[in-house]
Image (cartoon, rainbow, N blue to C red; front, side, top):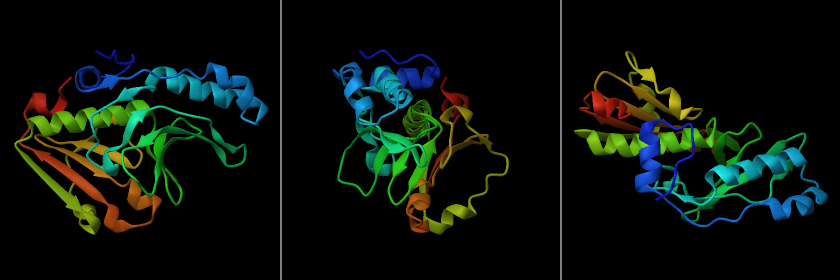
Length: 212
């Protein structure tokens, strides 16, 4: 059974340890000198190595959007520049896609298509979002998907943001008996409003709304 990294909510910890597996992964230490010789700043190598130590090798349940998310979390050589910022891969895609999953210069977890677009402020936020989606899908009495420009008509009055998902273009909202996930990353990255999507989970009790 995999051991979840420290700092997650109880809900996300259960998700990682019960629904996920951790396969063997390679540390990055042996690449340090070679990557630095090829222009990767030491601080960027250290960021990638820290990501690999914390999340490398985790295979988690599929995401409800973004073509299910990375198959296995893990990274490779960072790329970029001081002017544009440095990025490194977050894991290989499950299917052929128009974008890849990357970690930005500020640690954000996002997609790189026509332009870099952060989804969550950190990889922890991505995992928290996966855990919440799995939990809400398990406990909701009703589930609705809304697509395209109709998403803008959702009434979020009385809802509060769910902070642990660290949402940027993926946000979660908690109401008195429902949860709403807004997925705007692809629409922003590719400037395509038809890619907007919202998932509404209704009929939730107190446990369903929080779950740890």
